[in-house]
Length: 569
Image 1: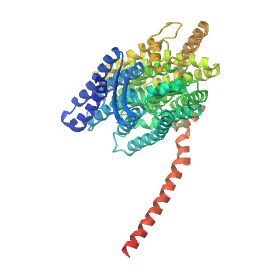
Image 2 (image 1 turned 135 degrees about the vertical axis):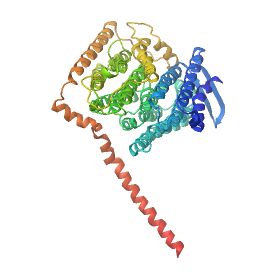
Image 3 (image 1 turned 90 degrees about the vertical axis):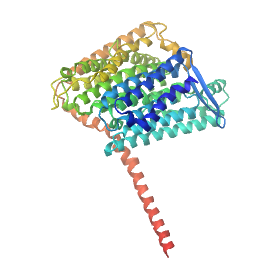
Image 4 (image 1 turned 180 degrees about the vertical axis):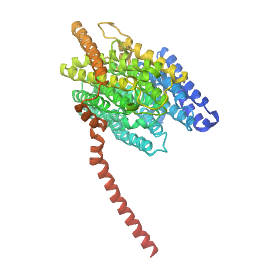
């Protein structure tokens, strides 16, 4: 009975703060929300130490139980969601100070954590789907939190609608799996797939539908257009939803269903292609942005592409490993950005920043570590997970390794560009910057420790033959054996990866401090517009649909006025 309580605690926070948040006031609302998330973390950690847990309500829907499962895979995700989530909650206590919607914000924040935990712990697909829709609802509420400004409300709607496209894929996948196997329990589906006796074409189609769902939630090409606009919400929202948790849900869904994907050359190739395109697209767009949060948003898009490539090449544990390292360094990157925004009275244009290392020395240290981890500098956390993806890519094909190495060079460049524009040079604005309060600095200290050290739980076999994470996750994901690379090849890949990251960071550090050449400014103007993908979507999809809607509405009005006239007669 303790397992539903893990989800119930933040849900209780949502209800309490939603109904009586104004009576709690500030900062009590923030601390109530934060401590309930911490309680979920401690309870989940305790159950994980006990060897996991299951909870089932047998009679829920006809033939479908309401079942929850805490195993090693969902346990790692639970630790990330509640652990990093707790730190972001505490940081938000300082960031949201004096906001008129303070308690409403923390109410939504707790709703999001509860929905994400339901998604992660669900052992039947309809239960996962409730959590899936719950995080969609919470992200809509949080992105449009400052709804009095039209642009924020529009961004929230855009995120919600684009995600519905992916959710349709999820629903179709569920329907097909039900028709094939007569169950939607993930544990039972794994058994039935192992037993065989099904149509391979149908299974591939079901896997494809689930992939469409994952592409929507994890903002993969071509459903990636909602993520940069989601920066309209407060910075803690960006850190929680678009770095540590919700956008990784699609990757988690694919890893949980590795038994559907493994050995299917079509699906594996498609996932690799989608992941690589997203990694490159996000990286190139990031290099053209001027808004500090949109720079980091596009870097998230790129890193999610790396996770998809890991799933496509069969490195399921590595995909989760990258989720863990990314949660630390990307949340730190967003929250360092938030500290700068806070110091500059809400300014988000990096052209009006610069020289922040003199004014915000502690935040500068956080940003430096986040940059090193994001750029893949050895021995920071991002290096080890990225290197593991590159090693598995080499096994898949040296051509893929070369392409992903190019993507990792871009990752180093966009990380160092963000750092240089904000923290180096001379201050170009008019505000008087001030360091953040302790309630905002301490969570970043802890995240900084994770960005430095969490990579050591998944070292390559030539350094640590039985690293902690691989056998731990394999128990839950399933063992899909593969040939390890020869020792010399593995070492060569590690050294090349390390040297390339150092060279790219050094080159970028010098390049972005100089005036930009003409070719870069031309590239930047296209990247700033996301290479006009939104304009193409508007021309091909949005505007024709609006015109059709206008036509139908005109017909409706004519028909109704005719009936009105007939009634009058």
